[in-house]
Length: 394
Image (tube, rainbow, N blue to C red; front, side, top):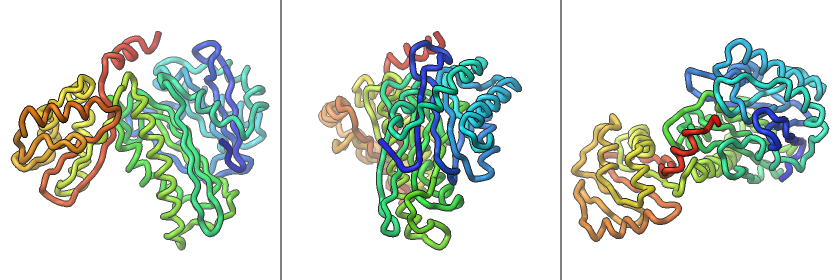
């Protein structure tokens, strides 16, 4: 995977584990219009704090990212480490320090191994190539079992624009925004207000619609870098049609990555779309869908392939949204299980249980109370999730 003007590199720095890619660098030949969205957790890692401050300029030229250590809850020394590592990269690249974005993922509360960055920086910079995109996608993995990458093209003003991205995330996933790292690259020519607007809207409809375990992390961010090398007509406030084309293409990439994260949820065996319609407003539909998608009882029933619709109704009832239980229809896939709040019987449950054996399916709910309709994407909750997180630090 290549994109004009961007190069990538990853090395085995030994930040936490030996003999695995754990330090990545993404570099643009020229400074990029850059937008970001970040975790809403009150406990924010040093990289998040530093990046938000630097992005006030709306520009960046490189991203330095490590796995193995989150550099979160590390106090003043953590911020010093984030600045020191970005300075190492800036010096090696010959660019201004404030054009470096830093990102970390891994164990919280442990100091960042700055010496590992210092040892590895020459090889990291020397390895920059347009061919190494997938190596960086591998270097940012923690409990992920697969790389998460996506790509699309769109024609804007007669020019082909590329958008491609990578993400990591398998646990501590209930973004708002967002429990993971995602880096998106495009050669589009687009002004910052339009890029930021497209990212915020796209993230809200994709990354902010996924949940694996209801936990929002301390480090999470999505960054989009646009270097303008496609030479399309500028996307700005006077080009709403072009912005919509870009928005739709960006959202396709974000959704692809978001669904890959859900599919790779720690211990997950199934990917489930929770679709709630007929609510008074969209926000009500989303709130109900999110409550269902984060319910441990619902998610364990999915894992056990038990068509226990009562758990879903119970989750809806504690969502904080007022609705009429005696009007609710509920289906698993194309199997209607509940009509006007009442079970359609054992035969319907048996048919619904067959739907639960599939790797991917939808739970469809109709409240019959208005035009509001939203989707949330989740996964089942397996025994392996507990095993993975019980000894994550070992």
